[in-house]
Amino acid sequence: MKKALVLLFLAIMTFSFCSKSGKSKESSPAQPPIAMHEVNEPRAAQAAPEPSPLVIASVVLSPETPTVLDDISAAAELADPKAEGTEFRYQWFVNGQQIEELDSERLASTYFRKGAWIYCRAQAFSATEAGEWLNSDTIRVLNSLPTLRLGPVGAVSVPGELRYQAAASDPDNDELTFEILSPQDSGLAMDAKTGRLSWKLYDETINRLGRNIEIRIAVSDGEGEKVMGTITLQFTSTTK
Image (cartoon, one colour):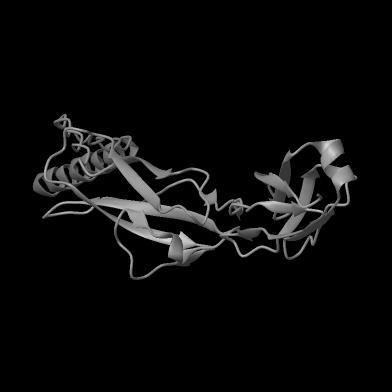
């Protein structure tokens, strides 16, 4: 009987201990996770790349106001004038169209006409690399003045008639107009298109104007200044 009571007591004590142990585990608060921080080591500063020696600072065209009588040249200048072993290649554009066969610094006047818009671009290069292309400013081909040619005049008989041909040409093939600047109102006539001059002379004309008369002639293409010239008449009287 005593032995049975002892076993019952031990069983009750064991059950009580296990119940307390389970409640203690359930009531324990959960521990927050430990945050892991990544530690970055400082990186070494990267060196800036060295600038290319093939950078062009400017491309300049000359003359800046060309006519069809002028060849045009381009001059490229490096940003670093001390760069060695550098050459240039060029591309020319006339009215937006590239002149494919040209790669030098010179554009001959045979490639353009009056009114054309022209620019050039240049590239610096060496044996191992090439730089960026740089454009010049755009320039326009201006009007060319005509050329007036006045030959000598022989002795002119009075009374008589003077016949003389003035000659002129225009590099732009513009239509030309001739005119007499002086003397005016003396019967002197000139064809404005052909430059043909005629003048019926009398003794009264010589008495009024003198025995040496200068005739001033001008020609114009209608776009620029007039080009002027002078012929001198020396008279021989036929009156006895």
